[in-house]
Image (tube, rainbow, N blue to C red; front, side, top):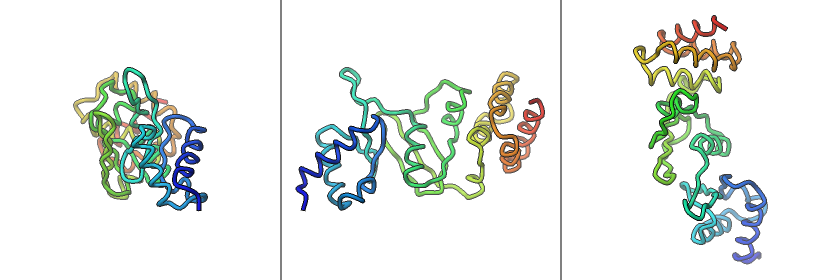
Length: 203
């Protein structure tokens, strides 16, 4: 049986070989070690300040700054990593959707993503990443751009969409597959559907 200290060292050597900012869970090493042994190794590495616990079973290999301390990846990057690792569907909402699309420079203290997984709050320094369960219809949005556009328009509301916003959205949608964008528009409320279809016709 491999000693716990040896497992800890081997696990961290493997982590160090990959990029800083990557997220891990015990299943990442289950083909080599028992999950319980890996969990204990993660806990010890956290106590040593080498890993940061994000939530149950999730650990971040962080960038460390001598002055600033832990430098977290962007909320969007962490959310995408968790979604890929746990095979979740997610879509940003509210201020997070506006930020990701470049429609706002305001970094929200609480970033909310709709998901087909369970509810979860992840503390990242002074910010919080929230996974909020939703209906399959809301997650039927397929576009990497048009999906967040629908959520951004919901956040802005009818009265918050001026010509500048429309021009920015038109430029964003120009990078989306028009078939996917139209399909996403059909899933949106009528007023959002009209705006997206109008913007697609200007391409």
